[in-house]
Image 1 (cartoon, rainbow, N blue to C red):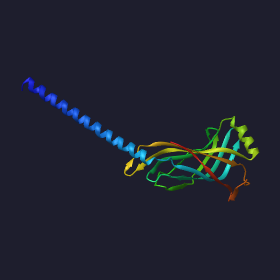
Image 2: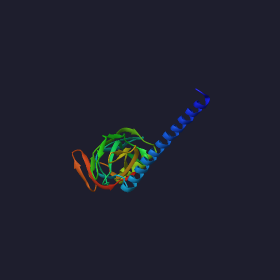
Image 3: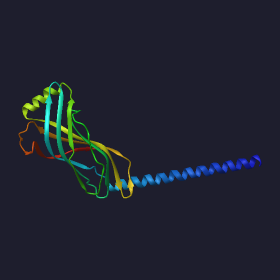
Image 4: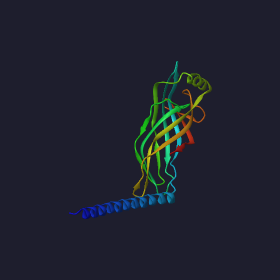
Amino acid sequence: MSTKECTHHKQKRKKLIRQCCAGLLIFLFVVLLTILITWAILQPKKPRFYLRDATIFNFNVTPPNIFSTTIQITVESRNPNDNIGIYYDRLAVFAVYRDQQITFATAIPPVYQGHKDDNLWSPFVYGNNVPIAPFFVPTLTAAEAAGGVGIIFRLDGRVRWKVGTLITSRYHIHVRCPAFIPFGNVPGPGGILVGNAVKYQFVERCEVSL
C-alpha cells in the first residue's frame, strides 16, 4: 500500500471520529435541553414538613455535663407537586440544642412519595448519657427552672425527583423543626399524660432547604 493511500485512510478515519463525537455532543445537548425545559415547565416545589406532636418520656440534665432524653415525635411530609414524585433514599432525625447535637440520629426507612401524597413518621429520638458542652449546663438548668427549653429536631438526608420515567440524581435535604419542650412529668399547657410520658401537640411548619 502506498503512502498516499495510508494518508487517505487516516484522514477518513479521523473524519469519521469527528462526526461521531459531534453526533454524540448534539445528542447529549438535546437530552439536557429537554430535561431543562421539562423541569422549567413543571416548576418543582420543595416538600413540606410539619412537626405534629412530641411525646416526652424523659429529659434530664445530670451534673457536670451529661444529658439524657427519650422523645417520640410525629413528623408529616407533604409532596406539593402535581407531576413529580419524591424518593427519600436516606433520612435521619436527631435533636439539636444551640447548634450542638444532643441525641443520636434515628434512621427513617426509605420511601417513595407520590404526587400530592402525605407521609407520617413517628421515630424515637433519644440519647443516654450524652456529654454536652459545659457552658450549656447553666442555660439548661435555668430553662428547667423556667419550665422548658427550645430545641430543634433536624432531618437530614438525600432525595431524588421522579418526573415520568426520568429519575434525577440525589440531592441533599435539610429540615429544621423548632419545638418548645417542657420539663417534668406534669403536663404544661397543651400537654396530656400518656402512661408515664407527656404528649404535646404542635402545628409547627418546618424549614426545608435543598
